[in-house]
Amino acid sequence: MGRLRIKLASSMPAVKKLRAKNGPTYKVNTSVKAKPDSGEKQRGNRDIDFLMPPRGMHDVLPADAPVRDKVVEASRRMAEFYDFAEINTPVLEKVELFKRGVGEKTDIVGKEMYTLRTKGGDKLALRPEGTAPVVRAYLQHGMHKLPQPQRFYYFGPFFRHERPQAGRYRQLWQIGLEIVGGESDPVYDAQIIVMFYRILEELKTGPLSVNMNSIGCRVCRPGYRTKLVAYYKGKDVCKDCKDRLKDNPMRLLDCKKESCQPFKADAPSILDSLCSSCRSHLKQVLEYLEELGLPYFMNPTLVRGLDYYNRTVFEIFPDGEDLALVAGGRYDYLAEMLGGRPTPAAGAAMGVDRIVDLMKGENPKLLQLRIKKKVFLVHIGDLAKKKSLPLMEEFRKASIPIRTSFGKDSLSTQLEAANKNRSDMALILGQKEVYEETIIIRNMETGVQETVPFSKVVDEVKKRWRS
Ligand code: HAM
Image: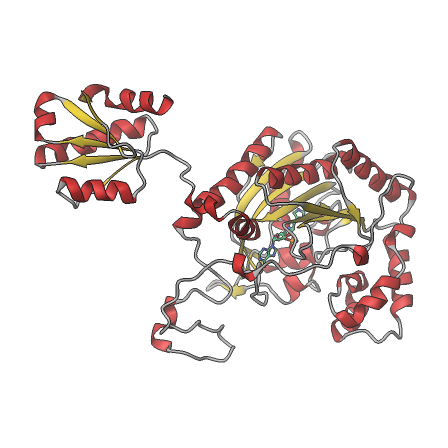
């Protein structure tokens, strides 16, 4: 495989955790203690514990909205450009879907899933990931009858009962791209990778590192698994790895424990065991990436923690960090695992919380971004107040955001509110203006005021924004 640029994980830069300071900031009343999970030791003032969100979950406050909007809008633009259609699946799904699709022995399903039993007796799970639900929807709605492949994108919350730490939340938000149906064509794998890479570039999250691997197929993976088990047999691995050796030997390569690293480093490489069609598939994916000028590392220990993958797996990290921003790969067998016909597919998901944390750390000024210009309506007297609602409707029809504070009456308090709201312009409507059918436009930065006809105010505001 002449063109592969091989760089092993062990030679990658030392990896650190995302800085905790980039995590969400909680304004906590110091008399309120964080509420431990049920089942964990109860401490603190129980009377007011309910004022804290559940452990590992956090509020998305309005101050974060501009950054999150940027992430979502950049992704949506990219998805729509490449003809991906939005799909929204329920937050709750049957537990069985994830057991079959993601794998009962995976950490995500076996250890981290939030499950509940409904009054009717159904066993449901808060979805820990989005790929199995998308494929379920594809099968349920007979989407194989539509032109193939079908392309989907989604944005929503997912739930994993992980140990909370910087960049690891129990309610996490993902943006996902999935290409389902058609051929097992390497061009789709490359397309998903480049789309996320370019989204991250646009968001200026800093230098990126794309880790690539192939985990083979039904033909070549069993042989590799046997070699791996033979290699690990008798080695003094950690307790988790002892379980992996029995349940899911490929995950031995995913162990992060220091004591297991030397075993990992000398383990046989899957790249030497790929069958000819998996080798050719990988080679083509990498050639597409090279054609796109997209740098990557080969990481033969990258196996991913979900059972549905075959062939391509990849993760995109901020350079030198160990929490992936995007992860995914090919999953040609998932539809069959769920009882459908063979349906090649590829996709990935991006962790929105991690990206927002990173962007806040890299460029805290983003938080003060005013994405939209704002107009504030100041009304003085009852007559002006009456005119306010119809006037706001005119602005709504013109899609211009306008704020007001109906509860405040004096000019100065309303102008103060306009200032606090960081409005660009205030529209001042007093008794005199109502009689003269005019309105004052005040530039909040310069303080310059102009009187314009009331009936033309929307156009006058637009004119000033354009200039
Ligand atoms: P995943 O690797 O489990 O893959 O998650 C994808 C991304 O979600 C991660 O790279 C990370 O950015 C973010 N993420 C995961 N767990 C957390 C967490 N606890 N806190 C914050 N962010 C997190 C999947 O979920 C697959 N469904 C991806 C996929 C789509 N594969 C094919 N299509």
